[in-house]
Length: 195
Image 1 (cartoon, rainbow, N blue to C red):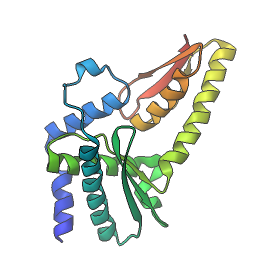
Image 2 (image 1 turned 180 degrees about the vertical axis):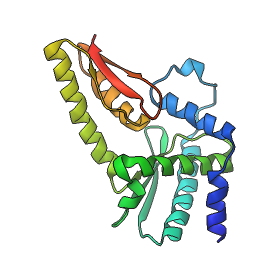
Image 3 (image 1 turned 135 degrees about the vertical axis):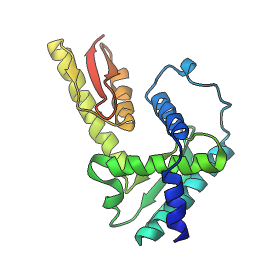
Image 4 (image 1 turned 60 degrees about the horizontal axis):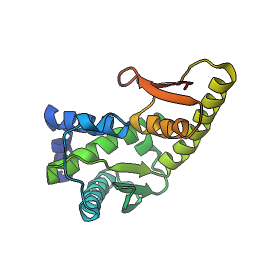
């Protein structure tokens, strides 16, 4: 029962911590970093420590759910990453990754609770994010082609911050087009238009 209490404690963190996480998500989307509070860059050791904290949190959750999964913690592209691999983990991903996004936020709160620093942790379960990144790359290329062919803006479906970042990366690598996010969560979307 202690594990459940610890999960409940993390889930009811105060609003200030939630706002800190929202600011970190906006930074991921390519928001103006000058507007974000200045923090010293975390070392690889600090980032790896964050991934260890996250792995412990996820392991506790898997135990509560009586689910099996192998957990890998690493640092990639300057951010902590935790990957969970196993069968029957689809419930941790949920429809369109919604459960995975929520679990990632709870895990970031667990890190914040232990370190006092916001985290840019990336959590992946069953390779969902890699697969989704490929799908979004194809979607972005299709949108770029439509914009180039017709010369008109293309609005994409609402997406999570992770998904928008994947699309922005592909669009930004393409000449003659640009992208921007518009709207507010959970209906924030990308518009691709001629440059």
